[in-house]
Image (cartoon, rainbow, N blue to C red):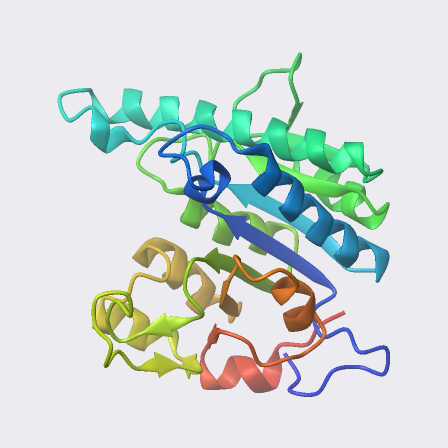
Length: 252
């Protein structure tokens, strides 16, 4: 990815936006707070209006997390989590379509009355036509997180970066909410993230991005406009990449 933005100012032409399910509940302990979903929809609209192709992966933690049922079979709990992501995806689709954004939900688990089954070529074609694509139901397999889904889908659609939305303004050496002396990294390598055990994404997701030099941009999603600013090349949050990735990976 080049350090300088092209002449039109857009640094990342095609992005995969990873949203945690927890953000969809807003201030509530669980469930979907539509004002939050609608805010994300408006941000996505702004990206589409400047010509950025957007795909989204949404978690399901606001509805279901396997750890709340410790005696349940892990695979069963994971499948329930996948279904929770479909509910969030439909909520985001509804919010987007209410403001005029054509959207498609593609699921890894076939449910044709609700959404389209995931096909890589279909997803890419939707994006080329200016539609926002929301990937739901994880990878379709238990034992894989939605972080790993984000990395996998980003690679499949040839995204130029993963935009990892969080509640803090980047990656720190320790929790900044607990430790005032926490140090923020403006840039960090994939290897350091894994070695230091930093909670950016799970190790499988980080390793996938590392193998393919796919940048991960970690930012505070609670600040409206951050996504667009990063797309336009502003240094916000933390960039996770290898040294070679910064020089060799080009955006469209």
